[in-house]
Length: 108
Figure 1 (cartoon, helix red, strand yellow):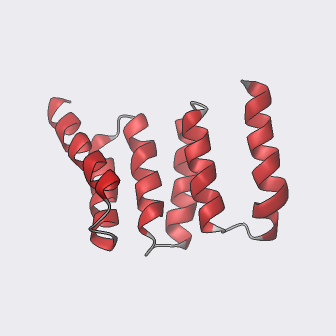
Figure 2: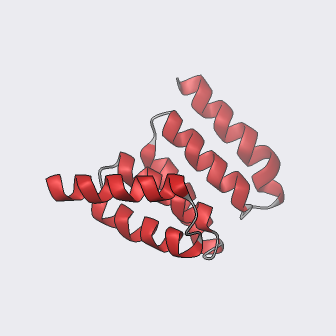
Figure 3: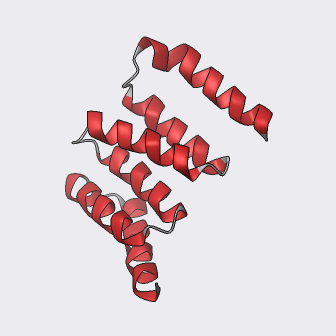
């Protein structure tokens, strides 16, 4: 697994993010990669960086919400996903994730 993580860092950092460290698609994609690799903390960091530099981009909020869900931070996830849905009310995937976060928040 360590080899894959190093590959993710080198691929994104050395190429696209060096050219534009705030590239929203690269940050969002790398956040999702971190989730798939099991590193939710790094996923949150990239998602926050993406969201802070592109506040009006719903996908940044979606990625942040996904990462928060993985960390079981359901209340924060609800806030972030709600904002994302304000920006993109037709996003069914984000809507589903918000409902899941609300449900899990009540169980906690």
